[in-house]
Image (cartoon, rainbow, N blue to C red; front, side, top):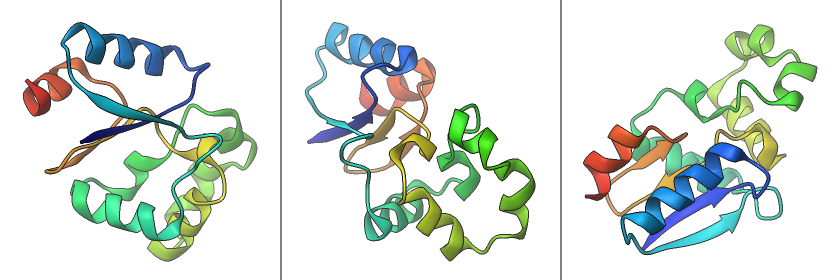
Length: 117
């Protein structure tokens, strides 16, 4: 089963869910603000994705900017970054798409099409 972490007020998430519905892709949606992945889950997703850990951060988010993470992340260890991501779903790039094969951060239609269709 495909799992998607979204935030219901996020326009990109709404667009991604509409794309899934329009393409008749079955999925399970989880509100990332209410049910943020924990440290263990984030570590698994990061390892499965093959992506740089920075891609898991919502770099345009208010919390990211308030915490000045663009300056702090380079000096943080991988463990520290994973622990930080687990503290607040609003720090996590969304939508977060999880399939049997991979994990995608954000909604790029071409990437999703290649993975799901």
